[in-house]
Length: 266
Image (cartoon, rainbow, N blue to C red):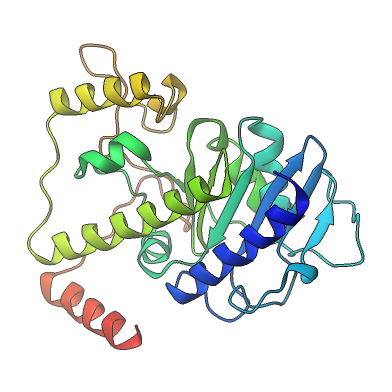
């Protein structure tokens, strides 16, 4: 993609992120890798809903400025993904409410409850907490970036990435929509997981169709069923308070109250 088209697209996606409440105020950041060593990124301290094409920043893959505009302070997150994943050319980071609620509660999105999610996204692990804009954050991401196309960052938000910006944005929206459905299902008594044989079929379909490769069978899940197929089953991840796979539970009444408050804020 040429730079002019990329600038236009980032502004378009930034507006969608803002209008759909994935970000507020100065939250979030978006980037496109233009070539092997050039990245176009959203600027610091700028609403994604009010960006203009001339305010975007150019850097190299080490974060060195190539223009007079200052890139987001969280650019290092994007650069790490680009360096670890040559197939990735766009990154979206946001504080989508339902996905971020999972990250704040110390929960991964790893329950196999929706066939479409298994087909197109796979499980979304939770990385341990790292201070934004520091090496703590990127170090926490490193074990997961090669095996997943979206991550939850404890007490922070979500990041999704793809071969192009629309794919990264779609993955972020899928992540948020899944988190919302999971919370609503919990309020109704809990979602039913898909059976292992159904998951196996979906994994074969997604690999054959090219939605996700074999590497998405995923290190983080650590689950192998009898057919030696890794899948998106419920597993434990370290939470932000350092506990080993601790699960956080809500009563039906507590969750309904949380949903009610979220609806009022929305």
